[in-house]
Image 1 (spheres, rainbow, N blue to C red):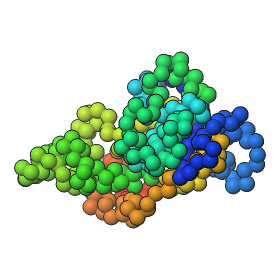
Image 2: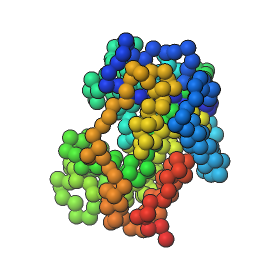
Image 3: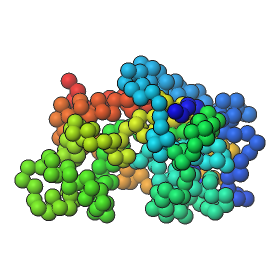
Image 4: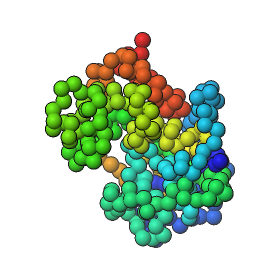
Length: 321
């Protein structure tokens, strides 16, 4: 019910020159597939390989990837649209999406904003501040999917999962997640839970969180929350042809490349971020050390398409045999 092909990205922005983000005579799609100048970095070759990997993974796993033949507008809530620069960005929580939304607000703001970091993080997540593809008619959706530059950013699946757990279940200010998910998880998976834990859900253990994810009952409850839902389910890369797959591990290089394609690289920079609290591979391995091999296998199966499509190898710390 929708289509497949065209994707565009935006970037960082500590300062702006002569007003941000004026669109050039060529759009990002044209610059990507018919570059106006040579790219000495070889980025085009890298990103073609990433696109090819997604296509091949979808083909090889077609029995799984094509369970759903058609997308509906309701599937497109994560695709943010920038009409001025003909971009579509599928946001994935825990993959720098707050800063990407800030950049999108600068790009779509027509001069209202210049520096992404001047936009409070909570404002970046207000739905009315950005337009998403599900708000268009079917004809408008298909036109944009065909003609706009479409992009997304991905991350090593289990690093993203641990990052989501740390953010949503170990920080006191996320009481809404504790109430909504923590209480349910503790009620189901903790023996002899205290009354306080059952009421507030504020101390969910990672092991309990994993039990919740691999429990068939969770799948029957409906789609996973966006913070731990697979990229495969959030952005539908087997149904939508993304022109660029950026990676969290190469965020700065990929973001700069996209901004150059958009034609705003001289005026807009992707915000740099503090790396001191970032979830790392070593940290992820530590979290997984107390997860049974059976649950590790189940969890890998849940996120398998994200590993395959985006070329992430099976982590060395997993016990899959």
